Length: 406
Image (cartoon, rainbow, N blue to C red; front, side, top):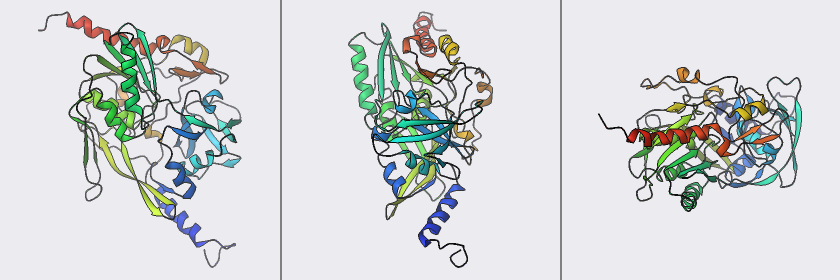
């Protein structure tokens, strides 16, 4: 190439291209991080950043929307889970890594990001102009649905997630003593592992939360345990999950399920059960490498399979169905090209069997949906059918307590 290629090519460009190509043969979460990408990645977990408010992933080598965060430019523009991003600022996303795409979507506050979007069943692409803002993700929303039964929505595991949940529980109890709590993780794509442990420790005070194991001679096994002294055990907990529940959110749901501290309701989760480590290569270059898989307290890997709820719920409220009129666009880890295959045999359930219980023709939505013309539709928690069903299941505990044990 150096001798015969039609144009002179910098040696550095060739080497970086070779590294990128090598990592592309591994899994969707292992990436070479060039200077701009590496710098951007360091600011992702603070809960405050400049952007348009979307979580993205790769499906069939195409950049795909996983979650548009409520109240952000993307959410206001009607962008939905499952939308494909074909171009960023008129540049094709084909051949770009996930990290490169994310970097290209960042820019100065107030500047405009142009995305070319494709949605299933559309006859043509659509250009969407989004003004970049400082994205402040408020991790927790809290509401008392009825006397004794509260609702908490956690949108991301930022560095303040556990503290905000703890404070929100205290605020709810100023209105009414809690008998039951619905923890909504349906739109939570993950975040900091430490915060997953902290949040779990608000509900259990001993035992394993998650363990990680790499290959022989690689990353050493690690066990994260609940921290004592903070757990609230005086009310029941229901956790709502769905296809966009991923990573740290799956860790919390699986830990509370295995410890029998919470009833898990909803639909099968995303299925990201791998651990990444970032290596500083110097010269403002980095490497994100998958080094291990994580396991639930019962030793189950959820990689590509997801967390299976105890109770599979019909997905959406009838009023939202009537307004939305769109198909589901569920994207999970198993849909990503090159994902790690789960070879664990000790399954206690059949994901396929449970998935067939979901209704395929339901509209994509939850506490926040999108209408047929792309306008945001806000469904309040007290009108959300899954939230109401969760509270009904919590109340069943009171009913069964009245029966004599046998």
